Image 1 (cartoon, rainbow, N blue to C red):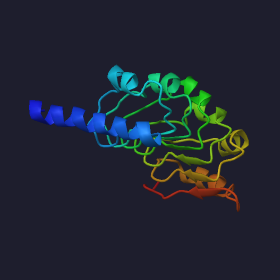
Image 2 (spheres, one colour; image 1 turned 135 degrees about the vertical axis):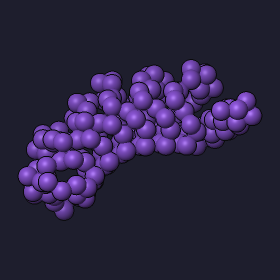
Image 3 (cartoon, rainbow, N blue to C red; image 1 turned 90 degrees about the vertical axis):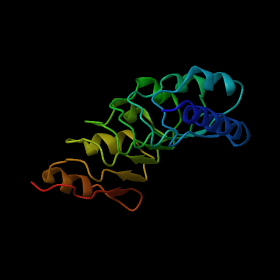
Image 4 (tube, rainbow, N blue to C red; image 1 turned 120 degrees about the vertical axis):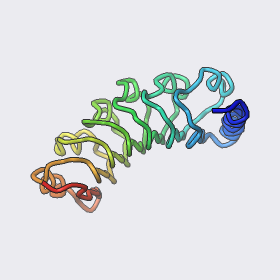
Length: 179
């Protein structure tokens, strides 16, 4: 990455932080981030961030510091990264929607089961091979939309998963492979 390109990236992030101060939405999607720098938290200190998108970056780890620095988060996306796990502390957020699509999750993170306010959960395009749909539905009473598309779930699980779809819960599942 050239110096000019890096400078543009920093400028882009700073502009987006300034916007977040006004509207509470921190949009850092497609900023080529490999991690979230501590300077970002300093810039936004004292401001409430309730929505955040870290989509389409190069993150391998969930930026756990966000949980304590932005305690009012209700909507979060870390789609299109390479994240494999979530910290348990994420359940401290009162999330209504979380987008974990296109990452490297092999299972549903345990912290998800603690998110009682969650209405939308997108786990599409991951590496999930098994799911306890009954546990998920029981744990998340407010869940309205669950997207499991393009995971290597065995076809035998498909009928059980889709059998739990109701008027209040929509389950999306697109078969990405054949057995």
